[in-house]
Structure formats: structure tokens, C-alpha cells
Image 1 (cartoon, helix red, strand yellow):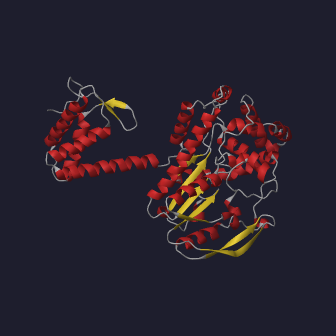
Image 2 (cartoon, rainbow, N blue to C red):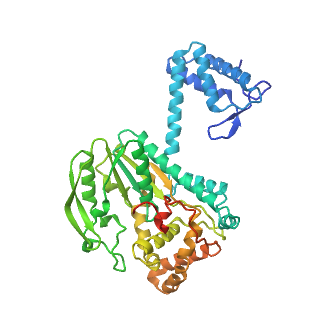
Image 3 (cartoon, rainbow, N blue to C red):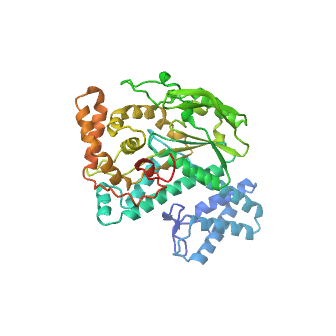
Length: 452
């Protein structure tokens, strides 16, 4: 049987790729893969490779018929069987190794975080596709779901997606041998705390013990903090933390040594040095939950193969009535407006007018490191937008009036105006009873079963 794959009668015509796409069948690809296995054992015989490919095709036609559509995996299984049946055991072994290596490389490509201009476009596409499939990719679709009483289904599906991503992150940690440091990082109000709690639960269920290092204790005394242009203390920058001490303590802990950690009092703005003892056991992982967890100097003492870095972001993909996507930072600002009013006694107007230095710091010290992450979790929930609207909307006109004529606050004015216009046509929802008490959204709107 020759190597022609032109689709004549009696030939297979199509094959299903691993991504589900159906493409033309090409016997030449089988012969080439077999030839590589033959070459690896010193038997680079093209004629034999073509003959084996022909045998494989005959078996596929016998099993599927000329109009059948086998998968790539089906074809590879048949190749292995033919090699074994024909006595080419060494070639079969080489082919299995080749197949495994190809699978490993595909998996590595799928897991690699590729960020152009700090945007992980492949993941963004997946988020958009999910939203389109679940009819929540626009304000109009969200309004329709609310009007038709199909809200609970969206809450359930969005929560399931997020939970699956956290579970996958935990599985990836377990797969990596040698990992001793797990880092959960991301910009303000991205949901790091809830995600860290859930990730910890999964890892503990798998038998891994975790020890958290509270980086809040490493803030410098308040008078040493940098200030923004309005004279406010800036907690958002890594220079507010004793990065050098953090790096030293992390390295010492992973080396099995005991460290004396400081303790910071937010009421007095002062740090007590060497207040508490901490040691990491040989079967324990160190856990860091921090805005700046991916900031290089913070863990420079630890080699990359000992770290697993999780990045959290609100990768929302919902269009407004004008066709503009809601900005991720605007979603996080809404979350922070609600959370800080509830838990930190900061009025929403304060959050809006001070968001400029949050953004300035994260654009310099957080977001540029997204490409160094080992896994990205999307914490955005399309269903949260109608819940956030009644909690923040009334503060936006006030912010616009306050900042409109202040040259120093034009950023706040434009952000408030943009968000006000985007939210205006969206239906509001006051009832949050469908939101699980374990939801990341509860970190902001309240009612969580977790302690923050």
C-alpha cells in the first residue's frame, strides 16, 4: 500500500484533533512519526515506515469504515498495536516515548502563561467564550437573564468554573516535585484571601501541610511609609514592606531554620521586631498571600523550581451597551468600595478618589509580573455586576462632582464617569440569597462563612 493520502475511495478522509476540530486525514503524518521512532533505534527505513502506516490505515478503515472519523489518540493506539504485533518491540517503545514527550510538550505549552502587554490573551479568549456560551457576555444578556428568572443557574455555573480553577491550581502544585513555597498574588480586590483559603483546603485534603507567613507584619513603621501626592500613606507599594527581611526569612524557613517574625499593629502603625517564632517542617509548604507575591526581590532567595506562583485577576469579559468591555480595574474598584465601607470604615468616595495610587502601584509592581505566574485564576463572576450596582452607583455622581474641576483628580473623575455610564442600563439586584456563603464575591459584599 503506498503513501497516497488524497482521499480516494477506501481511504479515511477526516480525523478529530485533540481540540475537537475535524481536519483532513493525512497518512504521511503517521509514516513520519513511525520513521522518527525507527531512526531513534538505528533503523531509518522509510519504506518500512510507509508499510506500517498502511497497516495502521487498513485497521482504522476496518474499525471505522471509510467514512469514519477516528481521533488522533485512536490512531496512535493503533500504531502502537501494529508495531507490537509485527514484532517491532524496540520501535514501539521508542514510539511510546515519542508520544509521551509530545504530550508533555503540548501540556507545557497549554500551561505556559503568555502575556502580551501584561494581558493573557489566550485566557481572555477562554473567558469570553465561556461568557458567550452562558449568555452573560453583555449588559443586555445579563438583563435578559434577570428578567427571565435565570439568575440562579448563572450563579451556580460561574461558581463551578471558579472552583474548578482553584482545584486545578492545587493539582498543579501537587504535580510539581520540589515545591516548598506557594505564592498567591494579584492586584487589590482580586479575591486573593478567599482563593488562598480554598487553595489551602484542597492542598490539606491532599495531605499537604501549610504554614502561612503573614506579610502584613512586615510593614515598616508608619512614619517610614511612602506617601502619595496627597500626603496619604501608601500601603500599595512593595517599598512599604521590609522586602529584604521577608526575603531572608523565607529563605531561612525553607532551609529548615527558625525565624523570629515581627508583628505589626495597624492601630499604632508600629512594628514590634522578633515578636513570634516560626519554623517550617520538612513536610510543610510555606504559603504567601500578598499583593506583591510575584515581586522578584521578595523571594529572590528561593529558586524558581521551589516556587509555585498563582496569580488572581478579575478577567471579566462583559460588554456595555456601547460595546465597551467593563475594565478589570473598575470591577475591582467596585469590590473595594463595598468591602472597605463594610470592614475598614472607608467611605466609597474615599476609595474612588484614592484609587489612582492603587492603580499606579499595581501597574508598576504587580501586573507586569503576570507572565511569571505558573497558573492564573479568574475570580470575576458575571453575576456579581447587578449585585454591585446598587451598592456603588449612588456614589459615582458625587465623585464626579467633587473631582470634575480638580486638575489633580481627573483620573478619579474619568473613572467615576466611565463606570456610571457603563452601569446605568444594567438592571440592579438587591437579593444576594443565591450567592453561596463560600463565594469569593462574599469577600466583598459580606455574608461569607470564612473569617477575613
